[in-house]
Every structure is written in structure tokens, then in C-alpha cells.
Amino acid sequence: MSKRVLLPLIFLFLAYILWISSDFMAIAAGVALFMFGMLCLEEGFKIFTGGTLEVILRKSTDRLWKSLAFGITSTTLMQSSTLVSLVTISFVSAEMISLAAGIGVIMGANIGTTTGAWLIAGLGLKVDIAAYAMPMLIFGVLLLMQKEQSFKGIGYLLMGAGFLFLGIHYMKEGFEAFQQSFDLSQYGVEGLRGVLLFTFIGVAVTVVMQSSHATLLIIITALSTGQVGYENALALAIGANLGSAVTTALGGMASNLGGRRLAAAHVLFNVVTALVAITLIGQLAALVDLLARLLGIREDDFLLKLALFHTLFNLLGVVLFTPFVTQLERMLIRVVRGSPKGVDQPLYLDQQALETPATATYAVRKEVERLFDNAFGLLAHGLSLRRDTIDSEESLSEAVKYTRRIFPVDLEEAYEARIKVLHSEIVAFISEAQMRESTRAATDELYVLRQASRDIVEAIKDMKHLHNNLARHGLSTNVAVRERYDQIRLQLARLLRELRQILRAEDSSLTVLSLDALRLSLKRSSQKLIDDLDEMIRHRRIAPPIATSVMNDESYVSDISQNLIDAVQVLIAHRTESVGGQLRLDEQEIEQLAGKVESAG
Image (cartoon, rainbow, N blue to C red; front, side, top):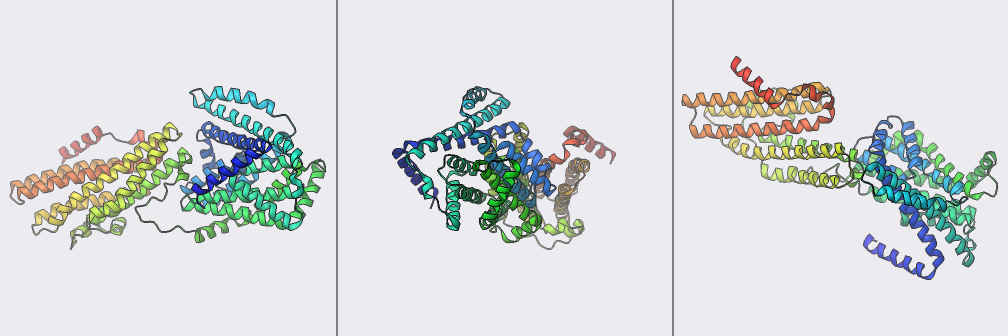
């Protein structure tokens, strides 16, 4: 059933329930306030971390235990497994961290989310926390009205905590009032049938509300007022965990291949953990009783025992999966395959990558690299050379010299299919990313990446014009004419080879120097070509109309080269920031060097 049909039905059902029961209205209002509080907390942490979460995540995933620790710690601090999961999926989608590392974070987040149950059961329902909510909301709104982002972040955090406290308060009051008119506990079911039934109810509630935290709040509050029995509450907790896997699966469907694999891992983890918990629910309940006595928890304190159960079966899932994370990663890569996309379709620009400035810029850089790779193939064929020839160690001079035919490439059609669509997607994605909360550094980087994408497009447009004359004069019977076009083809082929090598290089200082050397070589080659043409015209070795075509084509070559060099400089900028300002030559210095070389010659 589509969302357009399902959402109105949910609204109608809720409206009917709220109309017939004022007690249920208090419960529903409590849930709404609680969930709104979670949204405020997420916004606050997004502002307050200022990219810290992404930096820590990237540095905390080289070992499985670090990934687990990050998932536990971040979810415990933020009380939002949703935010941690979204950030993790976006990092895996952008290939900034491995799938195995993402699985570790997700497993850790499942343990971290159990701390919410401890807070609600141990404090939220035993203290009048509503008294603390009002001051938090007052100060939160005042801070939210300030212009400074740090104040806004603190304001969101205070408002989030305030609404969480109010939500818990109204839910508790609603269930207490509801109990006086209607006792849900009479519908409790014992045995395996009861476990399966209430597990399904937990799944359904979590899917509707899109929050296992909110479901746990309902379970704990209902248990505290006696509206649900302890055994049935255990099954509801299992269902809440299972329901969060369903919401993750729905979110993962909108992601790219890496995100879908991680979503599949999350679903598999939660489903297997739930099945084991259902199978061993009696043994787990007995273990909870034993640990409760050791921890000093009263035998009738079912709230804390429920929180302990929730923690235990999530820990059990981590213990079961941890030894097999590598095998799980291989299996998911083998089984979860994307439907083959055309080369013109983006691979990295999905909604998950927009979650953080770091993943947005990284995804755009990867996509611009793909655009450059597509352009590399078109430019190679436009020069009537195979891309594997340019990528190899073969002699380009020999390959150009012994060309027997000009490739019949329809560059207009190829441009539409492999360049234009992808460039449009990059521009649209950058526009959407710039409308979201971002850092100044990310905004600046997205701007130059968009320009790099534009430079690549301009290079292909110039090649379309150049290829027309190559097809006409590239195999001319006039040796002088053919030599000039062979020189043009060789110059561009060498540029493409060197740019590919620069993109693959790891030495940052050498890549900057190599780009400067290419610019200098470009200036010298252009000047030499003009000088040679002048001499040929004077000695009548080449007709003036053809010389004019060669001069126009040399201008295209210069523009293509400059655009490609500028694009590659942007693509390697993140590797050369520390050395770029010290070693990079400006245009005036390059002109001076080119002039000195010419005068020396």
C-alpha cells in the first residue's frame, strides 16, 4: 500500500480514537511530544557536533572493537540510534568507511539504544521530571532565537530534553487515567502464542511511529501502570527491536548499493537476534532474575528488569555476530547486487549522502571523478586511440604515428548519454546540499567541485569541434598537415596519460609539481605549434585555409587541456592542501618560465 493511501488511513484512525477517548489523547500527545523531543535532540547534535561526529566516525572504524565502541558511545550520548544509523549508512554509501566497519557501528548502536530504557525505567517514571521540562523549554526557545549556531544547538538540546520529559509525563498520566476506565492487561496472552502476538504488536507500533525509543517508552509506561504484563512486555521489547529493522530497510531502499548492503546487515542482525530471543525467552528471563538479584534490583521492579532484558538480548546478538562480521560482509557483497545502471547515472549521489556535509562533499568528489573517467574514454576515442592504450606503458608516439583510421565516434550522442545527464545530476545534488545545514569549508568545496564538473563538460564540447577537423584532416595525404594533427593528438594523449597518473599518485607534493609542469608544457607546445605553422605558411608547405583550421584546433586543444588540468587540480585538492600554497606556481610565473625557455631555445 502506498504512502498516499496509508497516511490518510492512519490519520482517520487516530482522529476516531482521539474523538472517542480523552485518555488515549493524553497518551498520544505524550508520544508526539517524546518523538518531537527526539527530533530536536537530533537537530541539536547535528549543529553542535559541527562535523565532529563524522571525523570521529572516520577515525574510529579501522578495528571492529572501535566501530562497536563508537556505536555504543554515540547512541548513548545522543539517544538517537536513527541519527547514528543515518550517518553510518551515508558513510558506507560514499565508500568513506568499509561495510564491515558500518556493521560494527550498527551493532554498537543497538546496544547503545538500550540505555534509553534504563533512563526511562530508572529515572523517568520515578521522578517528577515534568517540573524540569518547563525551564528547559523556556531557555531552549530563548537560545534558539539567537543567531549563533552554537546557541541554536544548545537551544535544540534543551528543547529536546524538555519535550522528552513532557512526553514521558503525559504518557504516564494517560495510562494511569486509561487504567481506570479500561484494563488492557486482561488481554494478556501466555506461552509462545503470547510471545509471538506481542512481538508482532511491538513491530507494528515501531513501524508506524518510526522509532524504537518511542515504542520502548510506551512499553515501559504501560508496564508501570499495570496495563501490560511483564512477560508480554518482554515480547513487545523484542518487537520494538525487530520493528527498527523494518524502518531501516525502508530507509535503505533509497540509498545506493553500499547503503542497501548495510541496511540488509541491520535487518539480518535484528531478525536473528529477535529469533534467538524468542526461542530462549524463558532462559533469558531466568538470567534476568539472576542478574537482578546480583545487581540489587528488587524482584518486583519489572521496569528495571525489562531494561536489563532489553540489554541482554542485544548483547547476545552482538556476541553471536561479532566472530562472523568478515564473512557477513563478503556474503552481502556477493548477494546484494545493484541493478546495472547506465554509465551516465550517478552511483554516489543518493539522499543518504546528504545527511552530513562530509559525506555530501565526498560523494560529489567521487561522482566528478566518474565524470572525468567517462570524459577520458570519450576524449581517447575522439583522438582515435583506445583508452587502454593511453592507460598503458605503450609508446603514444608510435600509436599516433601508425593510426590507420579515424574512429567514427558520434560525440554528440556520447555527450548526451555519458556526460550531460551525469553533470546535471551533480549540479542538482550540489544545489540540494547547499540548501541544507553545512559548514563553510563544505560549501566552498562543493562550489569548486561544481566548477570542476563544468570544466570537464567544456572539454568534451571542445573535443566535438576538434574531432570534426581530425576526421577531415587527420589522415591527410599532405604530410605536413598530417604531422600537425598527429602533434595535436599526441599532445592531448600525453596530457590524458599524465592526468590519470596524477589522480592515482599518492605523493601530494609531486602531484602539485606535475600539474605545474603540465601547464608549463602546454604553454610551450602551443607556442611551438604557432611558430611551426608560421614557418610552413611562409614556405607554402600548407595552405592558409588549412592553417587557419589548425590554429582553431590548437585553441581547442589549449582550452581542453586547461579545463582538464583545472578539474584534476580540484579533485586532488584534498590531498594537496598542506603543500599546495608552497609549491604551486601562479599564471604569471608559468608565463615567465615559458618565456625563458623560448628565449633559451
